[in-house]
Length: 209
Image 1 (cartoon, one colour):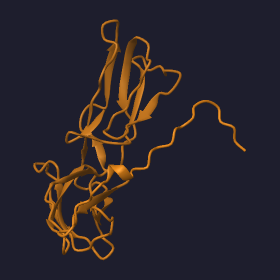
Image 2 (spheres, helix red, strand yellow; image 1 turned 60 degrees about the vertical axis):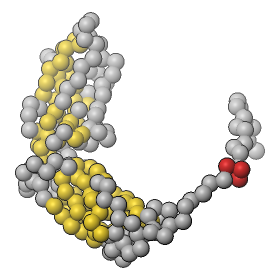
Image 3 (cartoon, helix red, strand yellow; image 1 turned 120 degrees about the horizontal axis):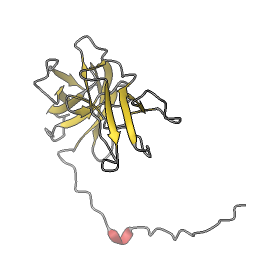
Image 4 (cartoon, one colour; image 1 turned 90 degrees about the vertical axis):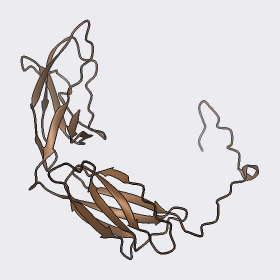
């Protein structure tokens, strides 16, 4: 697992070899997925060295780059955590806020948001204020880490929703969709009597023409 400020970092290369440096003879490295987690399974008992490989732009190792772990008869699994950090001169990534009507999906202009780090004590912390344009979007360039967006001004005719929306910027950037409800939005009613039943799905081989 790779973390920065307590949040998982995606697309970090993690390698595993024996403690003597021998290859496993199969997949020696994987990349972390969403949440910063990568797994190696079905390893035989023994001593292994888990190491950081390639990192996404803007990150560097803020702790040990390699850790040894031993799988034994009493410890059949092990967890390794690496700590990453992003520097003030690191590469910033593009993010796009997309504002939509919660019901119709119509793009909305005139929504103003504050965007700041999830961890306000971080030395790179700063607050940005952006407003969606005619196309319902607003853009920023941010360091890869966790952020929260809070609505300050709702589009005309819409209810303000000040609930923080958390999102993570990875090395490819991020697109964040934000929704608002019209002030005069009628209640959405559902009539169970008008539901269309799902047709029975046959099992087994199907002949195709």
